[in-house]
Image (cartoon, rainbow, N blue to C red; front, side, top):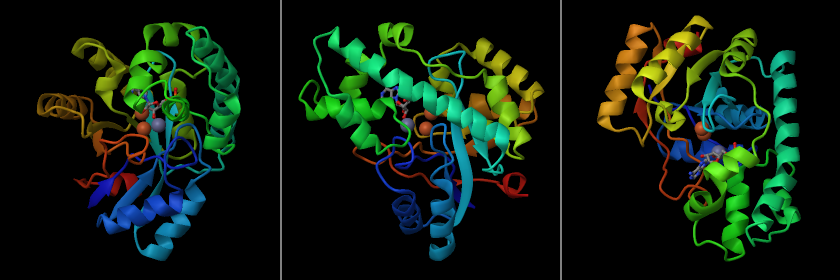
Length: 270
Ligand code: AMP
Ligand code: ZN
Ligand code: FE
Ligand code: FE
């Protein structure tokens, strides 16, 4: 079926509400959409209900941040959203984000950049506060001209990652928590981990041993060479291939549209 298995809504740092996102997916002609907000299941029930109304399959998903690298994400699918272990992990991750927020403001102030935390909180609407919220407020105040520039200059620098990290679980814990909640786990956008191919293979081998089900082989920013390498890795370690756009809405990521990957999803929907 044609599916996009990696998208974000206002429950985390996306632009559209779960209902609006499902409508966009329906208009795009997708058979299935997975909502995979960062560290929260809060948008899922709204998305599933919207999918039932509009006649498109909505898969419950999540994107958990792991500790080992600055951008190391594990996608989860089809879990019980009320699983106590998953709820506990989400609560801890949200607390970590809330405690990070004033530290980001202080980090920016040291560089002569002053934005009010209240504006970032308002934009996040009491839900998951992500760096893209800070980026949009930096644009609004004229410190940068785009979200990309906000990340390049302030929010994705080595200084940022050294000084303003937040508590995150090990990748193994992300995989095991998703599996314990009855779900399937996929390694998100492998290239963003930023490691060489040998190290990536070590990561995949270890996580496969912990219950990893799949690799996100299909991703708009993967080169054809990366895609075939990830497909070979999946094959070698007995993993499935997932695909998603990482759509956040054009205000958050101007260059990313919903994707329509042709995917084998029986293993995911069983
Ligand atoms: P957080 O989990 O709040 O630390 O931030 C993760 C979010 O920031 C994800 O939506 C990423 O897509 C986004 N992000 C991280 N690095 C960059 C970057 N260099 N440019 C644009 N967006 C980024
Ligand atoms: Zn995001
Ligand atoms: Fe991600
Ligand atoms: Fe994402």
